[in-house]
Length: 91
Image (cartoon, rainbow, N blue to C red; front, side):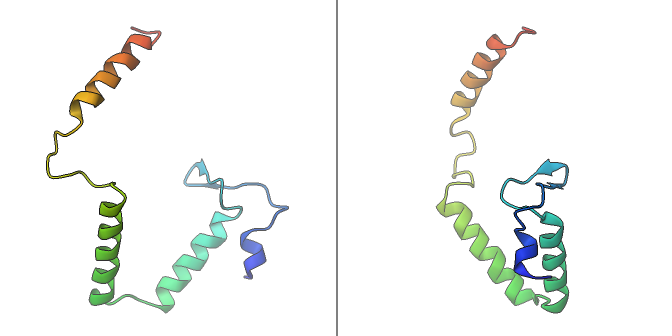
């Protein structure tokens, strides 16, 4: 496999897991590459923990993880749910 196979412009977009991925033309080739890489470069526990900690730090930095108060913002969610329910044709 060469890099041009991953982003071949003539290939139609493929589905990955039932959902079309807009950035990958051949997600099946990317998945094969990832699988082969994991077999050829296995992670030991220390390296896996470093990856996990880096992902955790990144998620916190971009605000993807909840803060210390799990109820923070619940009022906004309830308000939005009520608005959407009121706009629903079945309500």
